[in-house]
Length: 281
Image (cartoon, rainbow, N blue to C red):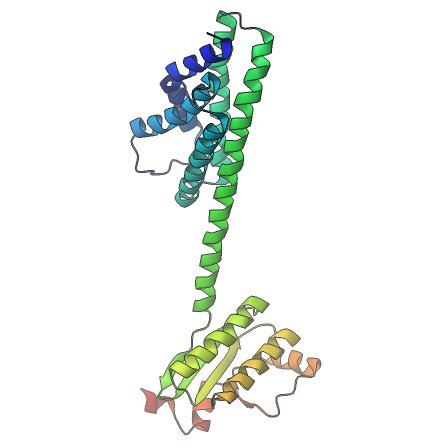
């Protein structure tokens, strides 16, 4: 039996011992313990299965490509699990540090006890470390991709909520615009406003700008785009609630609202439509 095969057998023989050491030290160092819905025994089993890949790689029971594929599969599943659990990436990657530490501790002990030659140690390094590095890489990539996708979905949901076209009465609705308008939000604002105006069969849309603190040329242009697009649908737009500081900015920018109906507040806008707040209650 060659030395690598022997050391591989030792890793398989002690995989539960290594898994227990990893788990015990990992739990002791955790800053926050998450509920993973797994028993300690199940977690130890998962860790031992991962450790067994290194023993199999040394024994050459399975070809290197298959081992790499198994490592990739494990890393993807673990990265997805950690991301969904809300564990930080830096915290999650601590696991690999412990795997590396305790696998090598077992190997070093066997190397000392059986006078394993230096050449074998170098061979060990070329097999063990690339597998661990591959696990770290795939784990991190999976974690980051899922995290970014989650943020993208959350942002999309937020943007959709940021276009609240609220019906007031038949054919009339109000769109309270709050906060900053960037390019992405402006695009969604145009799309959602047109879709909701069509769905609600609006004749008038009251564009409430009281929640907008800053208006630049881009924001103003998007407002004009929405007004122009709504007019093609036969919807008349009325701007209300323009703040004094915003009005001053608009003047300095040379923005022309001569062809747009502007009212100070909702009450004035409703009066302009021959409605009152009382009649709506």
